[in-house]
Image (cartoon, rainbow, N blue to C red; front, side, top):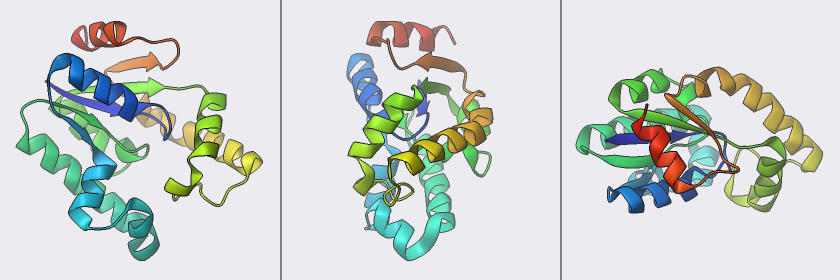
Length: 168
């Protein structure tokens, strides 16, 4: 089974992806980590030197590469992954997409603590970050809602997540 975890940055995709991978005994991949490894640059470096458009192309290429080279996995996608180049359609055709829907205030708290590693938000103060989250979530919701499974990150446990995925 191919499981694609989608949702806003800071939603907990990597955390839940690792837990799912361990429980299901399948490989785990973090899309951003794979992009960075393939490019030989960190995500902030890619954004700074090549820009967001080039990053999105690398993201799509890496998404396809992982999906085509592995029969089963759990993949933690970047927050914008489903929103570009028909990636949500590709993921839905290739496996099970799971939207981890995390509350605005939880995202705000997490992202305030992780700003340096997040190129899209690193220069925003708390008020600007809050507005950014609300706007981006409104823009991206149409893509996230196309996931085969939607779960609220809190409260959630691994068993209920697995049940929802296998019932999709």
